[in-house]
Image 1 (tube, helix red, strand yellow):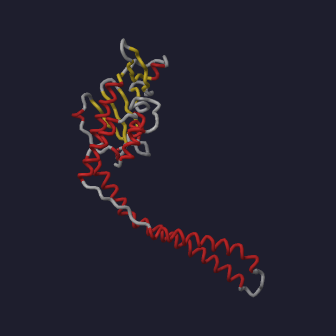
Image 2: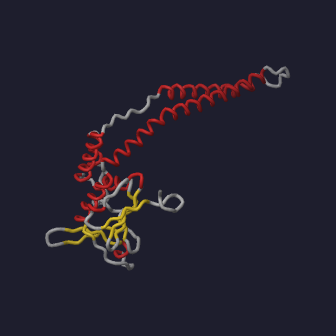
Image 3: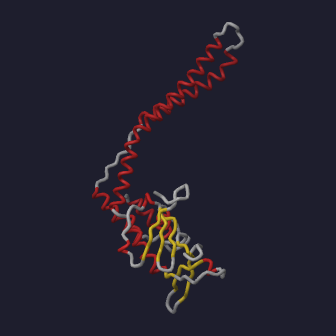
Amino acid sequence: MDSQTQKAVKEGGSPKSTRFFTGLLKCGKCGKSMKIEKAKGATKTYYYYNCSTKQAGLGCEDRRINSAIFDPWMTDVICSEVLTERNLKDLLLQLNDLCGSWAQKKRDRCNEIIQQIKEYERKNSRLYELLEDDSGIYNLQDLAPRLRSNNETIRKLNTELAVAETEKPPQLEISETDLSDLSELLLDIIKTSSNPGKVREFFKTFIHSIVLQDNEIKVKYRPEALISVNSEIVPSEVKWLPLPDSNGGPAD
């Protein structure tokens, strides 16, 4: 990851919330969002996640969770489950598969363009046959606009084909050492970031919701982004739940 990427993660635009998990935390009782509320102490202000239903006076329970304690703990849990060398290696394998299919996709695209060119050439051929018809029904003035349009399309397709044929395949030069360094770098960037909004948006790319229940926390995530879990590292029970597939059943 280059210095510009690191800077973007650390110093991006001003976030609306200074908490990592705003918008991700859900109340396990009513299913509504957990929102931040402030409480002033003798020397400082404290910030808590609390059920938005309770905050609105519409029932549910008081679920005040100190964000100063919860955020770093939950961040450690997520980082230890996602930003591992194993998961990054799996990502590398997926990228290698994409590179392997690149050449076939290029051939398919070039063949598609060639077929389009041939189709417009056939259209022109039929127009010229009409001009040569002995009946004299059609003349060049009648057919010239269509011929010009077809020729312009053929010209553009030939240009597109030339560009497609000269495209170079993507190059992946990532070693296992690079992956280890990347894992450590991502952890460092997340934990030292001065922009909680950027970290929150990063978490949202693979986490759907974090549901706070009485004795456990359920994290709903994208299975392709979270490969393995180790609940022994968590000081209280955390359940990692794959999101259901498009048919409403559990993901494979």
